[in-house]
Image (cartoon, rainbow, N blue to C red):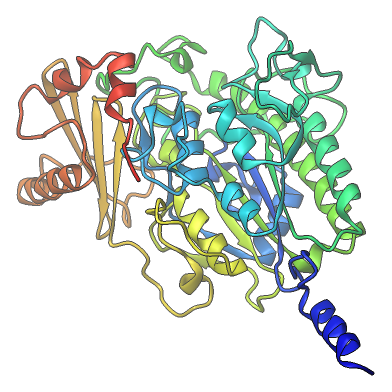
Length: 487
């Protein structure tokens, strides 16, 4: 063989022919559901609900049982939550509460795309169009918005879009012919079929809008639930014990107060029905992944953007800092790992997923990311991830989880209310010990104040009008406040 032939063979082996070598990179299937609390999963202890495919994921991977969204500055929690998740940044680090993801905040799929990944998306995108097209090279059955409205027949007639390579999305949305979850699963199945013979790794981002309301008439799959056979939540209350500042928000108008146990059972029947129907569609996607032969080389993430109160603590929405609302399910399945069915109680944020996936696939973590990788927890090399978690909602509520306790402070038009829960003894957050443990409460208030400053919170607990200081911000002012000039 002459020198020219040897050189050609060498270049081919090293992949120098303008084709990156992807053999070592695993695929990523990211499954995100909407408004799903951890308590709505059978494998995590709820025997009323059937979730066989989600249960299967939990048996195969590492489940983080103390995962939280950082919070929100407005009632639509999914907007900042999804922006935090996709940008790897905290609630006071995303722009405009997630309304826009600027170019200086490199998104997870954008970073993967820069490193040779095909990136595909279907389902909900609750941010700006430009960041969507920076992130994804393709997509189908895309929902740009927060929720399917009651006026447009909800999940039964979802308003969707085809991928627009220009990023303008000026054409009118089309009406989906099937239930939302099926439309998103169909798009994912078609995508997986298209890449099964491709050697380039992919990231498929599947953002379901279920089980978020409207709680529509369910399709002919999944389980139907009988209301009076369902358990009422342990921490059910007819109404919240005090004004938390958001008792009249849209989510709380679903049922009038005081609410009865029977009303909650009826709501749970519809809610669990939607959980089961989205579980069924997740099963279709997993089956197709198996059929393509890519399941052994695909990392799967299952998570929800936030939780939801279903009668718990006297609430129905998610505009609070109780675990049922800010706590979320998270499971990461890496088929290359020998660890399966592991549970970790390490404190973590939803936006820690971004650096974790970068670590797992061998891609650099951008400097704009402030989340922390969970890889060492997954591998068993450490058990503690974050010492404490800071939680925020609007200008009304601030919270801290630290050393087995949760502290929440409310300022509603100048009226201060404090809660302190011993999470080990009282995981349902039913026994407020703030007035009994005054020294401990004061210590937590001080630590929370320090965390607020560290996180550049616009509220200051040392100001008696901190609720008002935040409340003065109009939406336009809020947008200006969170525009970062980062180079």
